[in-house]
Image (cartoon, rainbow over all chains, first blue to last red; front, side):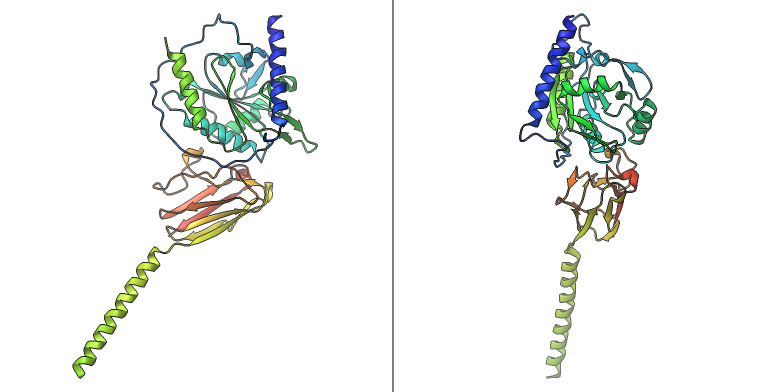
Length: 225
Length: 131
């Protein structure tokens, strides 16, 4: 019961986020210049310590949404499997030939900016809007074409309802057009180890160095005794 | 008198030679800015020209007239096989839209293959040959 109340609470917060993104200055298909700085970050890499499994989920955790998802390898999963690790989360769809490939590139830039000694502790989850066309097989083709069929990358699909819930929580707006394509806002989010949105990179081609530094700090904090 | 003429001729020839050498040096140092227009969207997306020969040190100006595009090196940094000279730095313009201009300085000899991230699968690629 408490979990459902929490879901309602985070969807409410997400809806607030969506409303905020409608305010002037927010972006739908936002543009921006890329920054490819490759500053090194030097943190020691230890094994990722797991969050205490018995700890209750944070009220704002995305992992309160306990829907079933399927990744591009055909494996069923729930988002809370990423509990205990920072996650780079992006929403996209595979047949997009405009901004989604850039969103995926942005996610890659952020992932790659994270110090390679801690990069294995980060997961990247790319959630499709297009639950009809982006089957696990199609997502696998996409991952391979983009050379992102990496062990800690997950291209996932689910039901339209699950996708809508997640988008609402993240404050991502989207709608299907009559031509089968989608209009959507552009967001790369970083979730902390509890599944709470820690950083939002809105728009396209934004600098990623700061978010990478935050991810490294999360990993380091998770390793602290 | 004869000697003076000879000496003047010698001086003139040397001055001419020096001028040629200097001109040659100036020429060698001069760089050019060449333009590639980025046009179209979806299947029509294209770099014009899609193949450009430049001199090392030249600057290529990408002038975006339509759509949303990138100018991205074939390079492992961009999850592609290496398609630019080994000594050259990888590049990725990030998203470019109508009216945007992006410059690439070609500083190493060789062939630079590049692509547009959204439209690569539709053949939106280009090549610069630096001689």
